[in-house]
Amino acid sequence: MWGRRIYNNVTSSPANTGSPDTPMTATFKGLSMPKELKTKITDASVADFFDSIPDKDRREDCRAVAKLMQKVTKAKPKMWGTSIVGFGTRVYQGASGTSTWMEIGFSPRKANLTLYIMTGIEAHPALFKKLGKYKNGKGCLYINYLSDIDIKILEQIITASVARIRRAG
Image (cartoon, rainbow, N blue to C red):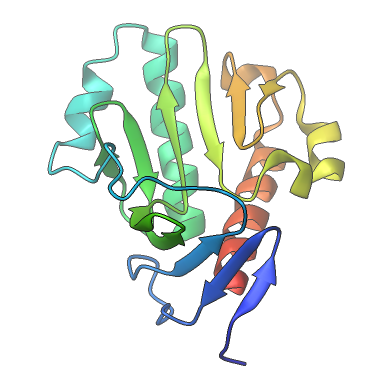
């Protein structure tokens, strides 16, 4: 069971002990990660960050997404930099070094709520067809408001993404 696996262009090592807050290791084939990421876990308060969001609807959506991600990951939310809320950690071994990153997270932007789906959008095509109104990038899901999507489908996407990340480890 333990050993290196290649999964979705990721080679992973058995560093995960099963705890959602224990870093997992992974090497991205063909992707160069910086030696040290600028965005790191901070001691900033997630609750204070949410309270600082001026748009009431966006603020409430953030609280709902955080509750959902915490339910799925069993990890407490942590601030990553000044505007990203992340859950769980992984250690990535790239060509230029090792970096720690979240298993899943999100950031409220002015135009939308950005969710970081670490396994990529293409890993869950059937679920995304049923999600509702959204835009996406390779690993980002852009939602205007939670009322635009099916929250139960979002929970399935988050669950599938986190499970896939943990299986790779």
